[in-house]
Amino acid sequence: MIARCVHGLARLIVGLAGFILPASAADWGRAMADEVGRMARAGEALRFALGCLLCAVREAFGAFAGAPAGADLDGGGERDVPADPAPAAPRPLLVACAAAAVLLGLGHMSVGGAPATMMLMNLIALALGLLLISTATMLRAMLPAPDPRTLSLLLALLLLAATLGGVTVDGATRWIRLGGLSIQPSLILLPLILLCFARSPSPASLLAILVSTVTFALQPDRAMAGALAAGLLGLALLRPGRVTFLALSVATMGFVATLAQPDVQPAMPFVDRILSTAFQVHPMAGVAVVGGALLLVVPGLRALSGPIDGRPLGAVFVATWAAIVGAAALGNYPTPLVGYGGSAILGYLACLWGLPRTAALSGRVPLGGGSSALDDDYHLLSLALKD
Amino acid sequence: MVRQRALSPAARLLLAALLDAGPGWTHGYELSRSAGIKSGTLYPLLIRLEGQGYLEAEWRPSAEPGRPPRHAYRLTEAGRRLALAHASERCSALAGDLRETIA
Image (cartoon, rainbow over all chains, first blue to last red; front, side):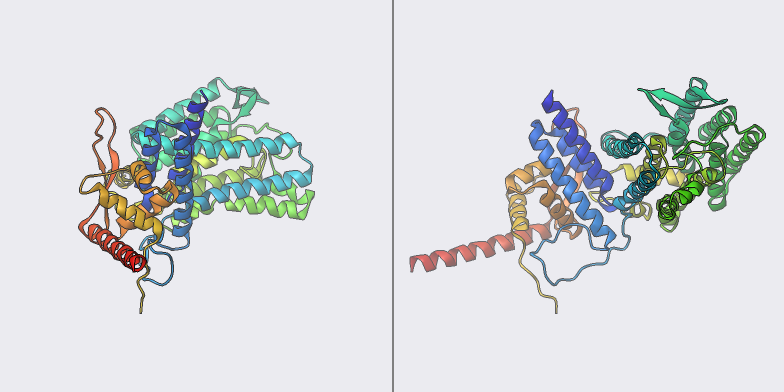
């Protein structure tokens, strides 16, 4: 039993290593996960996985600093260092944005006298999110990448099911109860549905947008309906296309439908409207909240400034999260990451996982020459560009 | 003027292990054990060797039926020359040490 747990931990660690590794070394991440998966002795697998994580961190920071991938073959000193033509997106930097936003929010909550359980829940959600992306990376190393068209529809149906069977508070049905916790599925599922659509617009992913639109109109939820429309607008501006315009029209109509319905939710302390109320708590708390909210769009801006193929995903990311933050500033809606609430933290980290890795999209061949999930990313984006 | 530095001990051990493996393909865990270096050192070296054209790395069909392909490694011709050069260098150094001891 213990051996199985240790082995599971080793797999998670090596999955995290695969997530952190720059795109140019993605195949190596899969190779590491494969080796750990084949090891019979749990202790050895754990040691091996920890070494892989160390390697991944080194590689990622090497890529961030512009150094060539890999350790020095020599003992150090002078030698020619070839320039890396396409530095990879540093995954640790993206994760650091999320962690920093959560920590800035905790600072605000601490100054404002929020209950310790709120802060603990946000920290647990951050840890859980990191665990989930390492698990997803590990699974991606072992399983074929899911089709974004099918995935988007599945996620949208989950969203609808959660709304139909969810908890109603003051006339809005946005939450589900899971193990005593109140979860807002839309904050987790919507960004992923949008990224799936951006990767591959199709009748199935268009249907997913339609289902999501109806779901938000039913709740009603102006913030999420607005984020859906904003994400599609971002996509349409960068990559106009028939299916995208159709989806944007549907989402805009849904947003208008939510505006026509009364917004009955009262503001919750440390959750809603904190972008304005934080300054009343303390000027530094206000700066922390605004700074944390601004950090949320940084990963998307990096994708926007990267290779052309990845820019639509960056546009969707920036527009969606900016709209969610904007809604929180204007209405009684949760402020993601800097406010109390684990759903947004989980959704944001999942969204980071869905962003492309820069080097892979610039057309670099993955090391090792084998097919990889990154090839799939490139293929899916190529399909998406046909819209 | 760029001065060529000696290989690190871990790189020497890895090259020797790859040389011992001959023309056949070998894997990460096996290399870690045969070279006696940890994975945190092994993979950065493999990545660098591959990037510099000293190592071939590819997904090969697994020897065990029903198992997925496995990432496998072997030295390229340039890698073999590098490994042999360092092996002969080491032999010469050992021979020199031995002569000094006997004398």
